[in-house]
Image (cartoon, rainbow, N blue to C red; front, side, top):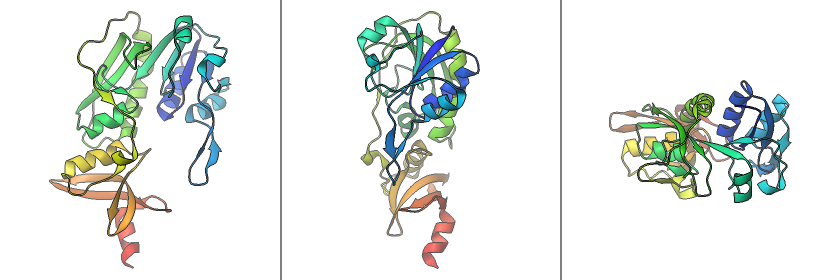
Length: 260
């Protein structure tokens, strides 16, 4: 693959960008605007921008992708977070790294939805970008197992490891085959833990939203973010929680503080 551009914003895109920079000359990073984040609403750069600046890669942050001067024939898009207009699709070769086995789990949250659904397998697919969401022809694809205690962070990391080799393998493309399923963006309702549900379903929800979003529920009359759990037969054990306005801690430490 010659000198390329990269369009990325989120952590997964930042990870793939860094791995690609080890093998290729990166002409630029196309990413989203800096935005307020955290409790203090401090203006924060997207993760991919942080990586690009550390590596000395030029950063482009237009309000709309069409406003940018994209000086590369080929552009790799991964976790960018915005649609690419037709005029740019026609002007450049766009390759998309998507962390699922397309056409399964098209959309914004493929890893999270796969884990929440209890899937035992996922993968990475490289497609040629098309106007329809995640529907372009497939150039390369590889599956891997989702282990019982993998969280979303572990699955995204494995997907990022595979991305550079799959991009190099994507030399011919075939239409997607099979019924498409969709991974909608995670909303507030997806984060809520209903303790009446089966332990495995709760465990899958917790690990699907860790370490970057966080599942939420009421425990001992207090609202908590639950970051880690494990299954002991049919029983759910909480391992790491975060009280409102506090920092993550072990569940045992939180209980001791509550009862002291």
